[in-house]
Amino acid sequence: FDPQNGLSHLETVRISDDMAQQRRGRAGRVAPGSCYQLWSLATQHQMPLCRQPEILEADLSSTLLDVAAWGESDIMRLPWLTPPPTAKVIQARKLLLLLGAIDDQGQLTPHGKRLAHLPCHPRIAQMLLMADDNEARFRRRARIQFQMEYGLDERYASLYVVRPAFQKKQSRLHYIFV
Image: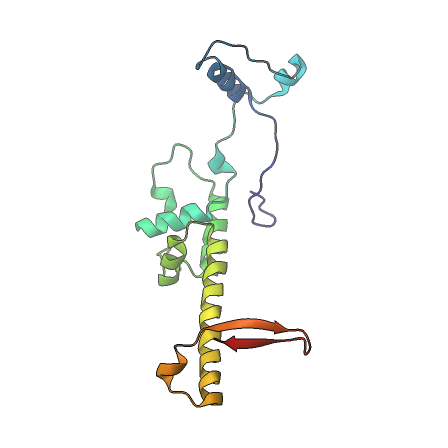
């Protein structure tokens, strides 16, 4: 997780010594064989002894949204093996407040419930819900325009499907009513 831009990304890093030991043990469990570690003894001594808990580096906005969906407003009251850093919790809370997912008390809003139902990061869920809302607004406006132009009753105009189409001659977007 990069706190500068607020996005998670994959990064290739060296494993820690405890991970190397675990992988070596796993290699001989299934069948007899050999495990080759392709690094020098100097590199072995430079490896960290154990890995850092992921919660210390991860983006906590999805976790905070899930906890709010469970009904808990304070993530720090949960029994953590490694408590999340306060700065990361504050950053996640700010994002969820900005998205309208939680209120000032940390309670889930109706919009937050919609975000929590989508199996993705809250930012992506927000984008998907906004796109869906925009499409619904577009379809309503197009249907009203269609009614006005052709004098159709509401019952009949709702039977038409609206699809955007691009007309190259005039270089503008037109709508086809099928």
